Image 1 (cartoon, rainbow, N blue to C red):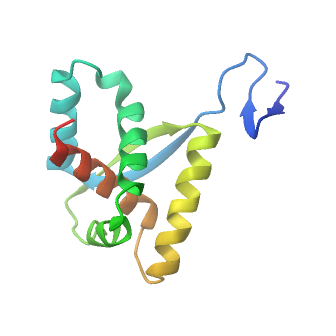
Image 2 (cartoon, rainbow, N blue to C red):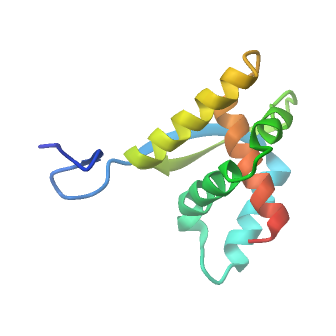
Length: 129
């Protein structure tokens, strides 16, 4: 497999974006709410969950209070289930920068990666799209 670097975006030899699996935990009720939104959406479906969540992460970052929202989404309950999404190289870079900003602000946060994803999902669910 021949990888080439173009415009700071890693592409595989078959010209597909370099997608990696990102795992996280979330509340089972939140997972079910997300599933319902995707099923009933005009623009998304269950196979587009990664797209919906990656867009939600970008939307969350645009909120000036996003770090506080992430801190409030820190997982302390045992009622969490595992889930996964796919992220391209560019999405992972954006996500990593966001994670670093959160950890800089709240160095003792537990599971910042999952907390960012949970905060993004919750924030977008509350927007209803």
